[in-house]
Structure formats: C-alpha cells, structure tokens
Length: 246
Image 1 (tube, rainbow, N blue to C red):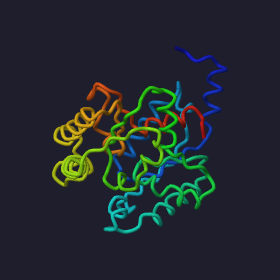
Image 2 (cartoon, one colour):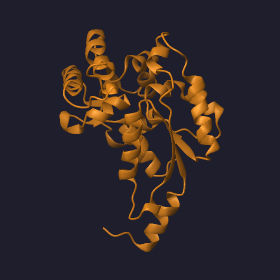
Image 3 (tube, rainbow, N blue to C red):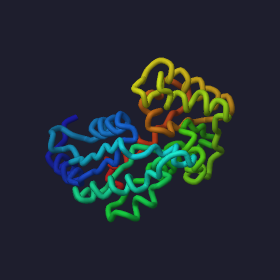
Image 4 (cartoon, helix red, strand yellow):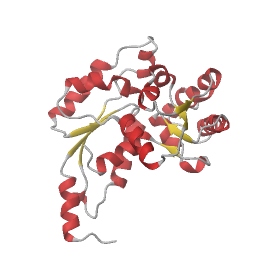
C-alpha cells in the first residue's frame, strides 16, 4: 500500500527522534534488535527511518556473573555507555538485554533521556493483546530469574519456571556453553533443541504463553517452535518505539 503524502510526512515527523541502543550484551543480539527495528519501521525511503546511535559495548561485565556475586559490577560500564548516548543527544534509548534491566534504575538516574523499560511494556502488551492468559512460562538466564524481574513486572500472572536441573543444564548451557552456546555464535541445532525441549516442559506444566526472556533466546526461537504464543520482550520494545510511546 502506498503512503499518502500526508502519511509520509507523519511517519517522517514521528521518526525524527534519535534512538539510542545501549548494546553489546551480546553483540549479535544487539545487531538483531537493530535489524528488527529497521524492519518494523514504516518506510518508503531511507529518510523515513529513525536516526539510531548504537554503542555496542561488549566490554560491559557479564550481568549474570555479577548478580551471582562472581563477577565485576556492570553498572559503571552501563552508565558510561548511557552517557555516550547522552552526548550523542538521543531522545530515548533501549537496552537489548533483559538481565541488564535489573540495573535500569541506576542507569536511568545517570542520564536525562528516558530509557525504555521492556518488561514494563511487556506487561502492558500482554494485558492488551492476551487478556485471557493466566499462566506464563519463562525462558531466561539464571541471573534474571534470581533478580525476580519477571515476578516484579508480571506479578498478575502465574509464572512457570524450569526446575533447577533443567535451568542449569538446558537453558544456561544453550546460552553460555563454549562449545554450542548461542553466545559462542551457534544459532542452530543443539541450543534450539535444548530450549524447545525446555519450553515444551513449561507447556506441560501449564504455561499458556512463553516469554523469550533473554535476547540470545530471541535470536534462535520463533513462534513456529510452539503451539502457544512466544513473546520476545525486545519485539514489544520495538513496537513501543515505532508507535511513538516514548
């Protein structure tokens, strides 16, 4: 469908905002987020797209290790990266890393521009689009689970998590294994099989919806892998940007 001249002006005006991406956690997930933002933006020309400033700071210490007390605090590096975006005069920023949302208040206090909270937007999205959902299965890093982020933002739902053995030996290995983990660059085969198997267990335990609660998981899982909805919070965040909610 061709956009009218008035609609083209509206799209371009909406997209005059400068979008910041506080990325690098991991780098491929950051690139995937940007690609999805491009695809989701109504456009007929290059100029219809957002101006995007991305700092893919892969030197930010691992968030899960820090949460478990085994690694360096990532907050100083997160704040430094946010300030880089502030110097670039972004209007709003996204963080394509769910675990990093545990530190979002500290980051937000350090800068003047708003940082989009993907988990808050996720709650709104589910309530709006899936009002009958009661039980949700969560696929995420152990660090994210320990923080209680999903319990905080999806408190109106019965949340179903993998048991400790499956979380450690399936989910975490699918993400972090040096041999076949997604963070090592493997985005087909074994990590997908392990995550699908875990998702099916959550469904058997009563999940009516699954959340890809880690950006690496969103790299490899798609809606066709399951018979129930699979929601990626990063897709919800992108929708919020495109719909000019920030």
